[in-house]
Length: 136
Image 1 (cartoon, rainbow, N blue to C red):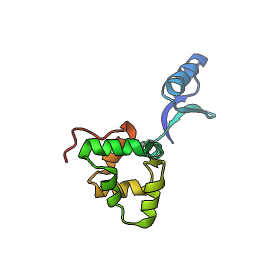
Image 2 (image 1 turned 90 degrees about the vertical axis):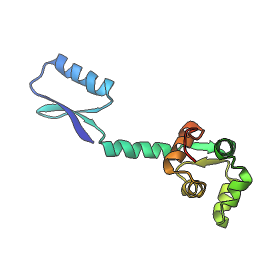
Image 3 (image 1 turned 135 degrees about the vertical axis):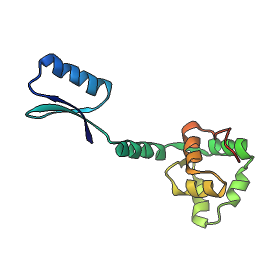
Image 4 (image 1 turned 30 degrees about the horizontal axis):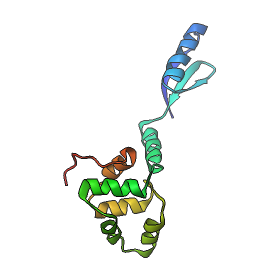
């Protein structure tokens, strides 16, 4: 967390309330009162990026959603996709999963073999489709 704004004492009650409304209610910052000031704390860019990565990693798609997106994008069928997986444990995980989570390393491995970048895969899990303007 980093300091986003400071209100130095002495301040009027209205100034305090305006500060809280602006920085907590409107921007979502944490407000902390110290002996000589009121501060608004917010996440750093790195913390925001980490939180977003964690959110994306928890996104999931059903097998149907994955197969339809791959077929629409590159005419990749389930059999073509399955043939890309040579590791027995990965094949079992792929074959018997009911849904796939973006944070699973197997997704990146298979995606790379099929020519997809990490950004392509993020887009897929967020939008349930692949970018149609992507160059193949």
